[in-house]
Amino acid sequence: MNRFVITTAALLIFAPTAFAGGDAAAGKAKAAVCAGCHGADGNSVNPMWPKLAGQHATYLVKTIKDYKLGKRKDPMMGPMSAPLSDADINNLAAYFSSQKQK
Image (cartoon, rainbow, N blue to C red):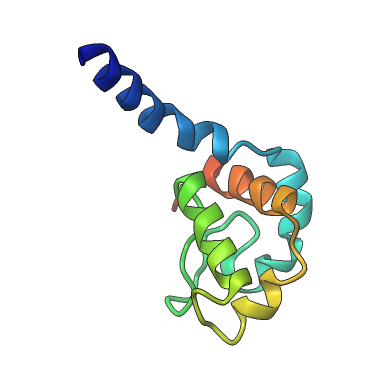
């Protein structure tokens, strides 16, 4: 029983990190289209648009995928996320999560 609990806890702790793995350098290149609203480094200066810098990668992946799949609605983010591949999303998440929030 204890071994099961420890294994399950380890999976819950480490699985999100593996799930959200991406290439931050590739994400930086792809993030140029995000800069208009969210800032070049994910630090939006407009309170209408959230800061992406420093957010957890798994949160960013889930949020972008939810916009892409229509589970989360926004007239700007739906079309922006539609052409993104899973690799693009993971790379963007890796880039923005590695930035410091200002």
